[in-house]
Image 1 (cartoon, rainbow, N blue to C red):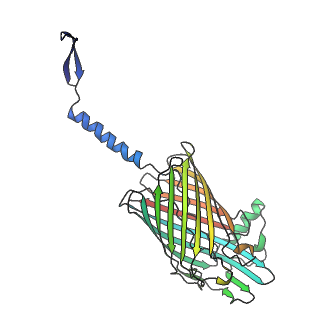
Image 2 (cartoon, one colour; image 1 turned 90 degrees about the vertical axis):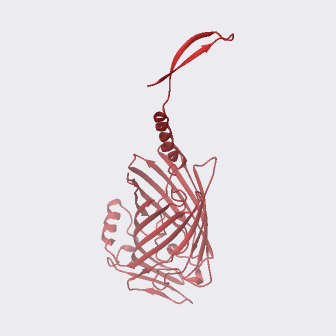
Image 3 (cartoon, rainbow, N blue to C red; image 1 turned 45 degrees about the vertical axis):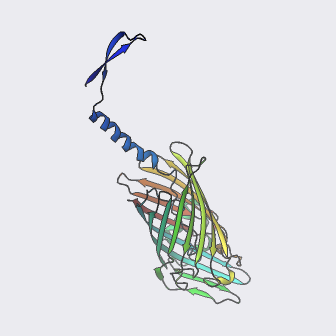
Length: 352
């Protein structure tokens, strides 16, 4: 190391002592600058406190309306983009009869969603979402019955139904009947959304969003709702400790037009809420518990499965070192009869 000699003088100008001090060369200074620049992006673009599970309603009669699936923007900078691929499999058996209406849903539904997100600025992101949906029979009926029996859960309307059958019907006096007995599949309703990240003194992340959903699916296939919907929402997340965080979102959805699926008994708007907690066990594993609820879409019906819904998702996220993240969860209808009996959820995402 090189040194520079410096003299210390008294107030009268006489030298008192001479000391040698180390002199920083340009290489040492460059190393410090590189180190600071490497740390700075981590400070400025820290990972959000909680990335929610990409939950979506999987009831065949309510899943295609416009509630937002993604309410928190991806952790990307301006002009970067990210993608997500979601696969969900649900198994539903609902049977109900009232004085004027009758409902049967015995179906296994799969939905695959491609979502692309682009950062217009450091605060504004735009999202495009396109689903592919299939309704049909399946192979999970026996597994679910055994699972319920093992845990002592009631079998409900599954008892006496043929395993892996498929039928969806809604009959109501004065309305055209909805009857689907054949497997249906196709592109669902596409949507576009804008999300803005706000600054906050009390939360780590606060966001607002606007989503427009377009009727590109088909009503008769139950791949679309036949309506153009508009949704607005706000969401927030915060770290409670170094490895525990929580998340909350609230949204309102306006259903457009007087036509579409079961329009005679449908509300013009509804609301959703979501609350989740995450525990970062390690750099790789994060456990998550998330509660999702919505108000009734078909307010003109007294059948429970067409009313509100409450579902609990249990799972977590694998954070891989190469930038990929994989969500895995199982969703149960904790308010029995208001949502599918079980939903298996997987979501893979990456940013560039």
